[in-house]
Image (cartoon, rainbow, N blue to C red; front, side):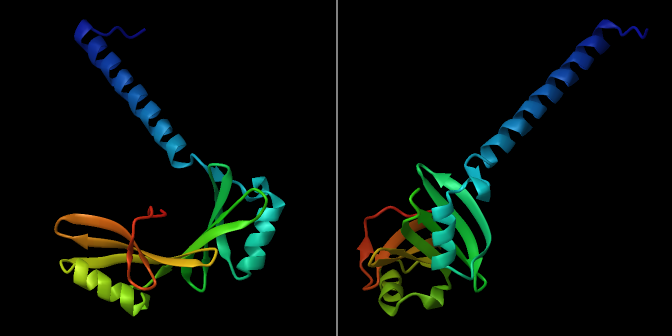
Length: 162
C-alpha cells in the first residue's frame, strides 16, 4: 500500500473535497436548468389538441409548467412563438417574435420620442383575448428596459411576459 506523507494527505483530501463540491454544483445546476420542463405525453390531451388546432403549422414544440398552466414554446413560419394554456386546454394568451420594423408605427414613434437613446433589441406581439400588446426590450448605455405598449403607442404598466 502506498503511504503518503502528511502534506500529500492534506493536498489529496483538498483535491477530493474540491471535486465533490464541483460535482454537487454541476448537478444542482442541471436540476435548476430543467426545473419545469414537461414531456409531451404528460401534457393533457386537450392542451396539445388545442395547440395544434390553433397553430397547425407549429413544430419544435417544447412544454413547461407555468404554475397550474402549460406553456408551449414552438416555431411556426421560422418565427419563435409561445402560448399559454389552462389545464382544460383553453388558450389564455400567445406571443410571437417580431422584427423591430414590424412594430406598429405608433409604437415605433412612441419609443423614438420617449427613449431616444435606446435601440430596440427585441420585439414581440402578445395576444390575450381581444387585446393585442407589443412588448419590447430596449438597450441603451444605461442598460436594458422591458416595456409594453398598446397598438396605439401608449406605454402600458403591465408586466412583461418572459
